[in-house]
Amino acid sequence: MNPFIYDHDTLYCEQVALADIATGAGTPCYVYSAGFIVERFHAYNSALDGTPHKVCYAVKANSNLALLRLLAEAGAGFDIVSGGELYRVLAAGAKGANCIFSGVGKTAVEIEYALDAGIHSFNCESEAELDLIQALAARRRIEVPVSIRVNPDVNAVTHPYISTGLRQHKFGIDRADAERVYDRAMACPNLRVQGVSCHIGSQLLDPGPLMEALDLMLELVDRLRRRGVPVRWLDLGGGLGVGYRPAEQAPDVAEYARAIAARVSGLDLELMIEPGRSIVAEAGVLLTRVLYRKKTEAKEFVVVDAAMNDLIRPALYQAHHEIIPLRRRPTGTILADVVGPICETGDFLARGRNLANAFPGDYLAVCTAGAYGFVAASNYNSRPRPAEVLVEGNNWRIVRQRETFEDLVRGESM
Ligand code: LLP
Image (cartoon, rainbow, N blue to C red; front, top):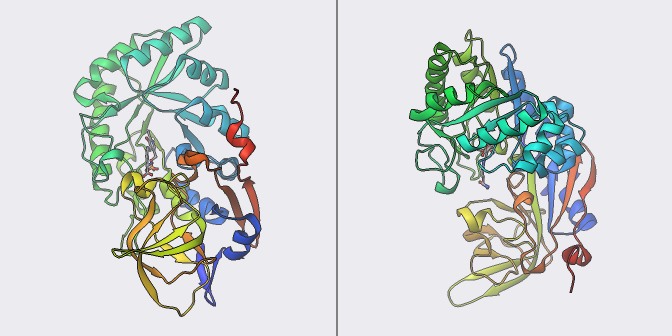
């Protein structure tokens, strides 16, 4: 299902004309298709039917409460990386027992909060973290389920900022060191060592490295079991990419899920995955309005009301997002940079792009913006963060109000 399609040159999200949302909610504004998100979750979940499994949505990709609620109702678990994400998941009505806690820098306060919430397990990333969880669990006289994140040293072919599975990265425990660290964790009386986890990177268009990591992890599971570690689950992390460019072929979610399920079949192992982007990226667009056209000797610029504070991916990762008009007109195309109002040359949504000849007042959709869009938005240049809208069939509603100027100074004092 592609939720964003033209009908008579008008762009729709499911059955709602996006221009109605742009005028009703204002711009810039994120719009998400509920139908797409639920469908993608089910694509993963159904493909893993028959294998003991948990699909734990990576909350960092998009943590709006309405989306978390949709996914919780669909039966998702959640991969969280902060106390704030746990708060959101609980506020959305999900159970702590469906959360796994990842991340290299969990604080004692966050660990206590997660223990209060009775989360499923911690994905531990260092010996010091194991020691801290052991100490906090001992004080409570409880046993805490943990899994150790192992760095498999596999090269995920993606942008260097989001590749995480190589030795030189800060993540996980070196594969060569894994057995020693597992032995050490097994000796901690208040830790129940039951899982093995990894995550090698994000936006992988080739599932090959994920399969390679899976094989290495399965070898490790075998070795660990032989030395007495009762491994019950394997968490393969997230990472499946999506097509940001028309020509980019993304792996099929269900095919990938079936392939990994086939490898663990018969091993008496629960399979966990932590997909984020592949569930929400294509479900979302960022709507923006053209403010000005500006031509210099060197270039043409389309100045829009969305900026790098709303969507930082182009500036931070040189990411490509298609930009299309909400209303198609036979006015041809132009070659231009699409830029925002922020005072930095790095503030662009597209550079040297062939796009519809759009005029001031026209609306544009920045595509594939449902993942790592709003969640990474900031107030830079004192710009209120945009509104978020959820579309369900022919209904739409605001699921996060646009921030106000008052919001900008909340908590400050003179
Ligand atoms: N699990 C862990 C431990 C992770 O670190 C991540 C993403 C995921 C799961 C979800 O990965 P996904 O399925 O979404 O690829 N801001 C960047 C992406 C950062 C990804 C960080 N970790 C971007 O805009 O491309």
